[in-house]
Image (cartoon, rainbow, N blue to C red):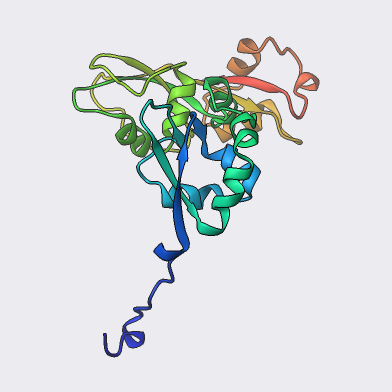
Length: 221
């Protein structure tokens, strides 16, 4: 294209050229991380070269299956094949997803009723969270949603989401981490509460000295 630089159009150099790759037969189930750890190939590159495999995993098959690798790594793969298959990887499970999910700290809990046609990505965009967050908050083990299903979601209290109709019901509480210098009154003012007495009563705090930085207290409307 003529004058491409004037239009901010520049060629993108490929990660690797076709003639720099080759295939090798895989005899067992295999994670990309096992290959990456042994051969030193970036996992993103393995994924780029093998888009046919989902979840960065090659399942076992009685038929021969192949994987595409940089040509200079083929001999190394064959030499270390048994070591690659025996490499232990940390498989991501629900517990690790939950551990890595966003904290509920200082967030407001709501209850959402799934409508027909709603799916995880749509809800994640609406409530400014991630799909993994929704799965972790609700102890889900599948990516399926059913009409009428109840989901607990945690929102930033300052996020002005429209709680339309009756499909969303506020549980109207969240946990706030006390900051240095906080008082009952300053916390009540921060969250526009009518009185700080409710904070004291709900958290069994009868004196301000118990309001220590780092402690968590329940805030409700």
